[in-house]
Length: 171
Image (cartoon, rainbow, N blue to C red; front, side, top):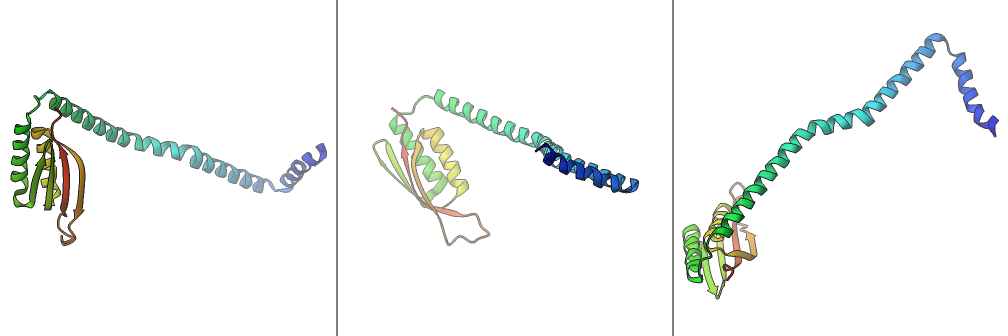
């Protein structure tokens, strides 16, 4: 068995000895180049790519952390506000709906729940309205079913239609 394992090594040594000195240098140089290429491709290049991306990833994560801190401060500020009574909350909801949407929205209420039906409103209006409703009426969206208006031109901002169900401020 020992002779079997020595046979390939002996064969390589014999082949090496038959090569001219110039050929041995060329084969050794080729082996070094292949080794350097493997070290670069498997070890160094991935590490350098990670290092290059680390700063960008750190900046992205820092921006996310700032956003989360801003949202936490906003939530704390909302918690600190006095709870509006039901009549004030309803007035704030009606005012925000009329100011932001005009005739494009229909508001119906039942107890501390409200339903808003929207017809062809843009996302900026909807976003501003949601911020108003959350801050002033202290209402939260329970369900939102919106569809994109198919008649909106492809080069224009999409318009949305649908219904939103809101719950009033907690008692």
